[in-house]
Amino acid sequence: MKFTIRKATKNDMAAVLKLIKQLAEYEKEPDAVEVTVADLEKDGFGENPAFFCYVAELNNNVEGIALGYHRYSTWKGRAIHLEDLIVNQNLRGSGIGSALFDAFVKHGYQLGVKRINWEVLDWNTPAINFYESKGAKVMRDWDVVQMSEDSIKKYIAKLNNANI
Image (tube, rainbow, N blue to C red):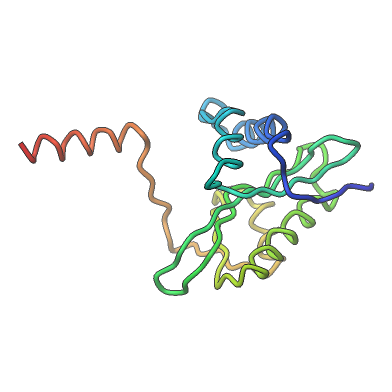
């Protein structure tokens, strides 16, 4: 199987979104994806890109992505975050995921980052095994903490009422 790994372009964003939605279905949250192609184009290819992305292309189709962004660790310094590594379900086990992961890690190395971070669902044994086989440490003693857009709005409203 002959595929290529390259940096994503704005024209790839429809295919990227399709893979994001496929991942959401796999992770049992098919209705959670709110981002649009227009969002991806604006956020990834504007004046100050919010993310960078590598794609795996096979027969002129995007069949996988590694999407990430820059972070800063107060303990380590410059870091990058792997938001998603997605391979089309039909092509898992083909080497595309490893090639995308390799490109992502090489990118971090070239940037001189001190760490690459990402999350993996605790039930996703194939992904955990994949990452551990690459030398990654799955830190099971940390919990992911998030605030949704709704939670942020409620918190700000509470702050605004308290400041009156």
